[in-house]
Image 1 (spheres, one colour):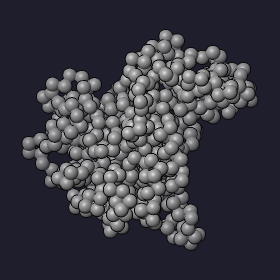
Image 2: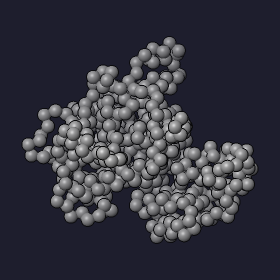
Image 3: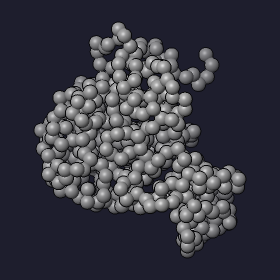
Image 4: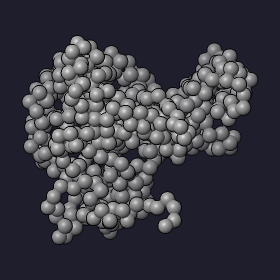
Amino acid sequence: MRFLPGQDPTSDLTYGDVFLVPSASDVTSRFDVDLTPRDGTGARLPVVAANMTAVSGRRMAETLARRGGLAVIPQDVPTELVARSTAWVKSRHTVVETPVHVAPDSTVHDALALMAKRSHGMAVVLTDGRPVGVVTPADCSGVDQFTLVAEVMAETPTVIQESTLTSGAGGVIDEAAVVAAFDTLHGARRKVAPVVRADGTLLGVLTQLGALRSSIYHPALDDEGHLRVAAAIGINGDVASNAAALLAAGVDVLVVDTAHGHQAKMLDALRAVRSVSTDAVVVAGNVVTADGVSDLVAAGADIVKVGVGPGAMCTTRMMTGVGRPQFSAVRECATRARELGAHVWADGGVRHPRDIALAIAAGASQVMVGSWFAGTHESPGDLHVAGDGRRYKESFGMASARAVAARTRGGSAFDRARKALYEEGISSSRMFLDPERPGVEDLLDQITAGLRSACTYAGARTLEELHERAVVGVQSAAGYEEGRPLPAGW
C-alpha cells in the first residue's frame, strides 16, 4: 500500500479519512477475485464475527463458517457450553441450513415465535421426524393465535434430497446439483424447501438464495470436512487449562483476548497457551502499535488483533483518552507483523463495506465485525419490536457494566459491586434489523460485493494483491460526505 504522491500523512487516520484510488486493471470480473485469507485460520472469507455476547453464538458460527468466515465464541461463555456449541456447529451441514420445526398440533403462536428466528421465515411441520408440511407467517395471518398449525400449513411441500447436494468425502459441494436445486425451487415458485435424508427424515432447509450462495461462497472446513469454529479465552485464571479444554473440544482458532493486550499478563497467557499446544492457531490482542505486535508475536501469537476504542459499543477513548485511529493502527501493526511472518486482524470501526476493503488494503488479513452483525437473525439476542414496528436486537460492549456483571457473577457481592464501578462500554443499544438485509448472509453479500469490486478497481485478484497494489488518498470531511449516497432528492 502507498499513499498518493505528496499525501504522506502527518497525523493518524480513520477509515473515513481515506479512500482507494482506481488503478489500471486487467481483472474483468468480480468473480475472478479470490477472497481467501492466507493467515493459517482456514477461513475462505476475511470476515470474523467479534467475540461479543450480543454477536457470536452457535447460529452465527454455523452461518458464517458455511459461507467461509469465522465467528469467535466469547470468553464469557462457560467452557462446557463452548464445547457443546463447537460440537453442534461441527455437526451442521455445509450447504443446508438448520431448520426450525413444529408439530401439526403446535399452535400458530408457537410457530410464529420460531419463524422469527430465521430470515427466510418458514417452519417445517414434522411427524415422526418427517416433513408433512411447511408454515409461514402468511399462512398464520388472520387466524387466532391458538389455531393449530395443521389447519393453516401448506401440505406436500417441495422436498430436496440431501444426496443430491454434496459429493465425496467431507461434504464437498456439488455445484451442478446446487444449481439444479435452485432451478427446482424457482420452478416451484418456492423461496425455501425442506431437505431430507435418505430415510425421509428432516435434515434442514434450502432457500433459493442459499443455493445461489453455495455456488459463490466456499465453507470454512477443518481437515475432517466440518465447519470451523473460533473461541476466545481471557488472560485471568488457569489459562493453560482453559486453552487445553477448548482445543480438546475441537476449537480451530484460539483467541486470547483482553482490552489492553500489550501487558505482562497477556504475554504470560500466550506462553501458557503455547505450553499446551505449539501448533494451534493463536490470535491475541488488542494492541495498536508495532511494539505491541512484536511482543505478542514473540510470546506465541500467530495473529495479532488490532484496535483500541474504535468499536460502536466502546467508550474507552471518551473515558480514558486512550486509543488510536484505526486505519493508521492497522497499517503500522500489519507492517511489523509482515516483517515477523505474522498477521493482524483489524478489530473495530467497521460501519460500511468500504471500511473492510480499506482495512485489507492497510494490511489486515481479516476484519472483525461486531455491532453491525448484532442486528441480524443469527445473533444470539432476543428479537424485539420497537414502537414504530421496527425489529431490533440489543447490543452491548464487552467492557460495559452489563458484560462485567455477567463475567463476575461467580464472585462475591462486594467484588461484583466494586468492579461494576469501572466500565468502558455501552450496556444497551438497539441494533435495528435492516428490512432489506435482516440476515448475516445478506450483510456478507453486501460486504463481499464491495470488497470484490474494490479489488477489481485496484487490479487485484487476491487480498494480498490488494494490499500490494492499493493506492490510498487522504480526504476532507466534505470529500467523505460527497461519496455518501442520497436516499432522496435535494
